[in-house]
Length: 316
Image 1 (cartoon, rainbow, N blue to C red):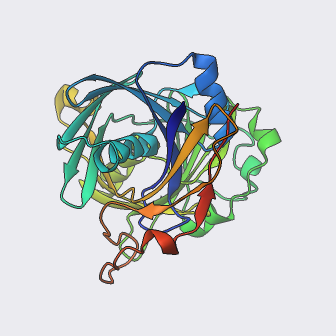
Image 2 (cartoon, one colour):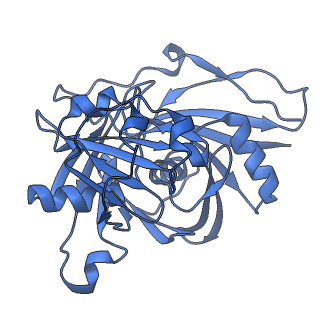
């Protein structure tokens, strides 16, 4: 008996970029401790587990290597990608029931669109030592806080890139998750990095849920509803974002953020119960070839034989 396990590089169309998410389709929930161990064994920033409820409707949960979390963008995108590209889902719209309520993913030609909640930060005074904990001697443009994150806006992308977090120092702060952001250039509206050491994720490569806070701020500051963002981690990733109208109570309603991304690189793994099934499976390119990082025409996907192998995980 084996359990399928997929790895999807989300928010990219290039190998070794974007944010890799584990996706584990289930017919029924495993014990929480087992799901946590699977997430820890794979050591990706998040592993998603889902169970089918009804037509185009799924229960969805996310685990970091250390805890279960309430919201994850790239693993939601990856789950939808697996359903459409590998599990035969026919609907163009999927609903996921989660700790953060119902999340919707829509397939629109060559991209996927996620509707996520808007979570604006409230402005606060600079917590003592926060910038020093990132190795920065900078004067921030703005600092805010949500229930579980600090949000620091710096003057330039260079300052964001120069940040070198001291994770021992960051443990003094609560909440223990951090967004650094700054204006972008060359057609990029803003850049960011995201750190979640309290969730077992020192730096997340590309973070959909952080943009629930980034989009309200940058939309207001730039006076734009449609934004293009880049997360400038080592792997890097690109996001196309839209903020609908924000009048009245709708401003903080559930459908206040739409993010487009292209999870196109998938590696299939098998979590084995027995050691007598060994081997490797080829990565293969799936999905569209929309070029998010540049304007050149899309390239044809490579054949499976030309993509490196990733070894199966064996779990006894």
